[in-house]
Length: 295
Image (cartoon, rainbow, N blue to C red; front, side, top):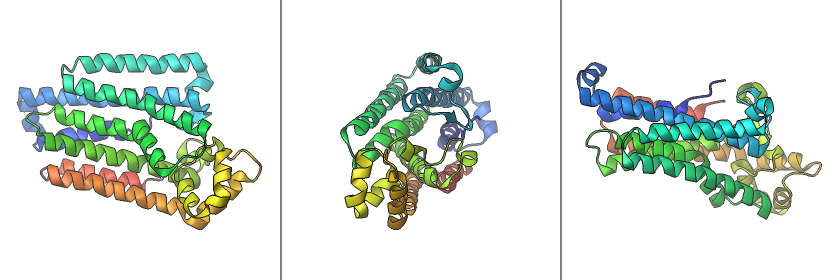
């Protein structure tokens, strides 16, 4: 499957919202046309980095499927999947350099550092014991939200005469959308199916990962849940116990509520910084769709 394409859509909508003008006027101005071309290339770079991270993640997590199809490393082997990810990162770096904007290069290079940092944090969590909510959210920022945040900021930096306040608002929009996106992913892992998710349900629990619904449940059921989390749900009955605790603590609904709070913060950032336009409205709608989605 081709995925949800949220990241490039965010970049292109934000680029248009920053221009807050008609398509005909954009294309009649060489300067605006050049900006839009650069921002479209940025959207492509964003998706290339994201796809590369999926190739690498699936090898690290030993995943069987991705978007309803066999994961790349299952179809072609670990070496080919890792090399494919490396190649995409290399191509993204070349395209990034061709934008000729040092601030954008620095911004997007930080994303690649954060992706590695997030994986290292996840591996350390797996080895050293039970995660906490603060550490979990930090890891999710590195693995998911940083790409969205820095892509949105880069889109603003590629625009003309964009103030630091607007660039910061673009960053905050992307960051909060990214956090909300991952929280909903965590909730759907407990509600979805292979058909809707493109991967087996309860994949995180089966991989030994304690995501937001589990961490919320641990606040009230810590005595029985924390030992299970520490052994990564490996013993018979561990997953059933975790599901019972999550149900009793309303862990999935609390995760969705936290995602909704982040979506609202994303919309607040837009309202404070961008002029009203249909593109701004579309970005607001996208924030709602991220929270309301079922896949």
